[in-house]
Length: 337
Length: 170
Image 1: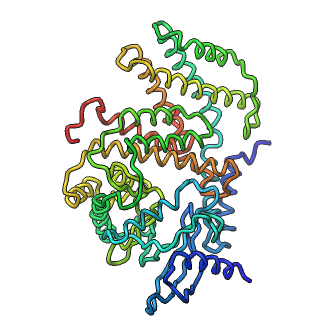
Image 2: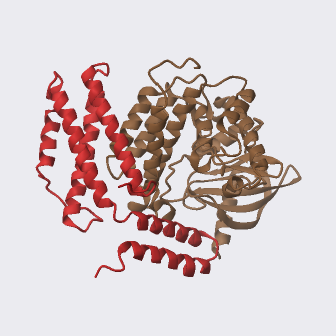
Image 3: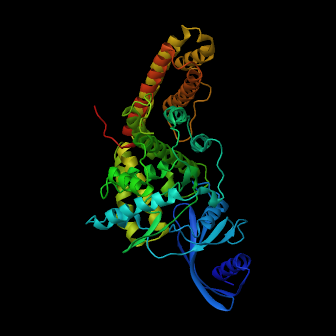
């Protein structure tokens, strides 16, 4: 029995449970595909019968990789996508959850596989800029739509202070994985806890919304992907993350224009000071992810060469944080809040 | 025998892998891994000889800045809370370090400097944390925090040069 047949049987077992009314479930075209830095992925087409109707759906199986720099809750992700079904947001349907890792050894989810590509290199290299500008404009509208969804439908928990909780979560990740005390980084987490703005609204936050995490085709954006960092928080966190320099669409649509489109679709103005705070937060989050990735290779958990030198990304993140901090008088009350 | 020096070796290694090995691989995980390794070799080629200056400059800066902060705060009513850090700093200055070996560093003197650096990082973190527990509107506390704040900016700037983000300036 080949590895693929064994994998196929394990997938079918999970699907039988997830689709109790389905009969004659079959998979075709099962093949390994690229799942990103933190995940293994396989694509296949699912065929079954339900209520005497023939049904089919292209699917993707996503499974956590050992030594991943993203310690995510795949059950949570499944719950979020399940809750968003019917919300009008372009998200893949959640088909099945394999929390026990019976398919690959790691927790996994099976989602609807949607059309489009997530090619961040092609997106950023768009020579004419027109297509990527249009897509970025769409992203502003879609992001506003995401932030208008009632976060309660996702099953996510919201504590007393979700903003502080997020800062502390990333601070803990930094502390657990740092290979040296790093006083500037420790200081910046303390600064964020002291200066975190009160959110004007709490929303479902995607947590990793950026070029590379949405599918697009010639018509535009077809799906938002990779919800493993979703949480309840200040929605400006998503806006700031989209515009991190490494993947920023700034050259197609400047941040100010994106924010204007976002505000139009949201139906309210947002604080530029709060957005700046979340630009600082974004750099610190990326720095913490980089520290973790570097640790995973240094500790032997991972052999991923793309993570070996991730600690070298940290100084630039901290430099940007200090520049942003120095560009604003944080003691003065934010009149736009 | 000094040639080829490590920088040249790293450069030629990166070039050989790029020209002779990478084209042999199919686009896939192995290809991406090798590209990442070549990228790292190129960064190391630009920066392999900057470590010594970086660690010694940082150590001098830590000692001077933390020394100033501890001296200032020791002259206040809060001084008692910092007496152990004052002692630790004195031990670092006098070179009283038990274990000078550091994984990845071959030269004993550089290992000692690295161990000193790690101890000074930890001391600075502890100093910052204790200052944060004091009234922030106290002018002396604010002055001490400002000194550390400037230290962090200098450290990050030196990091940027050491990492290879910014050029070395004479």
